[in-house]
Image 1: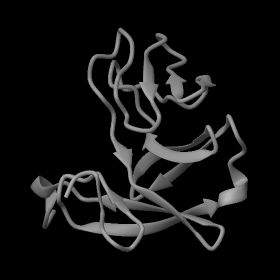
Image 2 (image 1 turned 90 degrees about the vertical axis):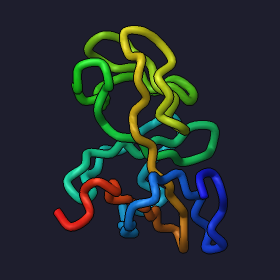
Image 3 (image 1 turned 180 degrees about the vertical axis):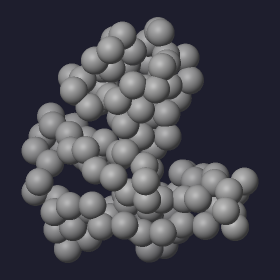
Length: 128
């Protein structure tokens, strides 16, 4: 169902594992061109607002695992503060060297002024 709307407002970008919906913050807490760091189910997540839209990505550069928080958000790109790798905040796609692998992105939804993120447990970790 990747990239499909599930009828509840979620755009599913998951690997198919079981999911849990988590409240992150009020939608007004993330200003245009800014991001907010949050932790959901033990995963550090950047909630970014660019071009009027919210996106959620893993707060970890795929190059050396450093936090992306502290980096610059330029349009729809987050720049790693350590070595300058860039990622698309909408998809997690690596956009520049030294990163060559994407980072995870998470489906989200604004509902009644609240931001909700859908976290999927990878299929290989079910029952762990």
